[in-house]
Length: 433
Image (tube, rainbow, N blue to C red; front, top):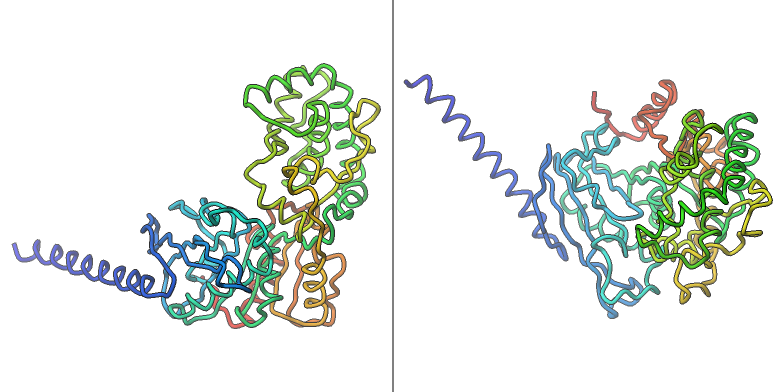
């Protein structure tokens, strides 16, 4: 009888101890100034969704505040902490299965920061003038200072795509906030329509044969335009898509975006429709790669397009492969014309963020790892083409051969993966076996 009861007692005591430990961390979160704990989340580790109060404008705190969503995963007070500088909505970080490769690699705490004006981090009323890179960097600095009162280990910032750009801007603004940065597939664009992506797509992605096949695919879509367009229009009507340009122009932009998107995500041309396939199959393939909702205005990415016009920049298109059936002759100014409401169309681009970031990286040697994909069009506006790292000890650029926007540490060739791991070790980070 005693032998059966003892394990049960031990289990109860362990459960009580675990609850107490969770309560301790939760209480420490609640004690942080400006932090409101919302929900405990299902996860392998203790995890919470919370809000932190941020000044709407960090240069004038009297204007008001916004509530920025942060998702925190706890592994240990003295363990490293990974700060994810998400560029968009943070919803996916709520999933129990969500995992971040660097936090797993370092057995680190996770502080996942939703970007202001996205998801649950939108001020009311939504005054766009405070959606700036400077305010975003100050948001992150405040988060770092606040949660640094709990987590005493080394800090590393990281982000993917726009989030990678965000953590690069943040590092330039606050060089000493973190011990290292890993920026994945991060563009550092220089204009509303940067100009480097078109050349990259025409000259550098894949092989010459691959590029020829891609352009032939685009041309075939244009040759079939008269037949596919009515079906395309019906599809858009069924979903109540609303555009600021005629539907035949939307179709042309679909074909332009098809090229960019396929290279961006590493979509194989092997699965593209063949000449013998019917028009319905051609339409289905196009929509699966580029849903027309991308060109609906406004859509869920409006905060980003506002930023693109004002400070972040974006990419342009070349129409040279559309052929004689094209309804658009030039795409210059398309972001203003079709991606944002008319009231945003007069926004002028300020290159200050681009210039300051380039200057910081050229004149300094911070502990930053940049990861890009060889065939990702965003690599054209990344740091790789212009940042000479030969004389730098800490800034490292790694390009995944034939890689896409999905390039990460764990899918690099083994020798490059090991080199990245060794670099992190040289900065004092212990790698989990």
